[in-house]
Image 1 (cartoon, rainbow, N blue to C red):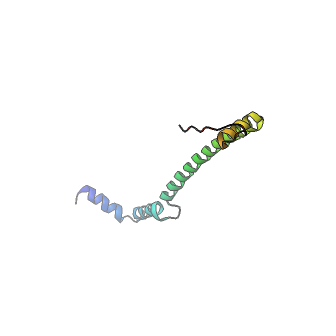
Image 2: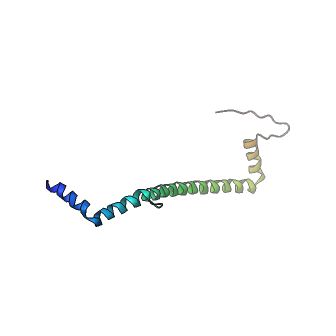
Image 3: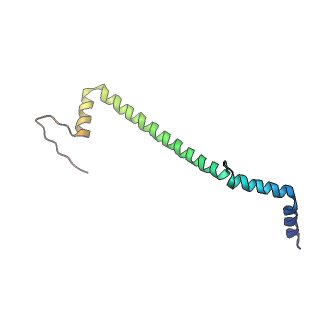
Length: 98
């Protein structure tokens, strides 16, 4: 037997090494808190944190728009005309699609 094969045989005959390897395999794949589950959980947390940042930005933008609408009737009228196609009784609306 060559030197490498002898070293492998010694590793697998040592009960402490075999126990350590079995424990490592168990922790990596089969445990309820396995390393694979932890990686998936960390990835999901990162995705959710990105979503939180996105929605916080949207909230800030919408709050700024709301403050602009509440600040003057001119802004409110412009918003109503653009978003809801409202018009005065003697006006006509022409919609141009880009």
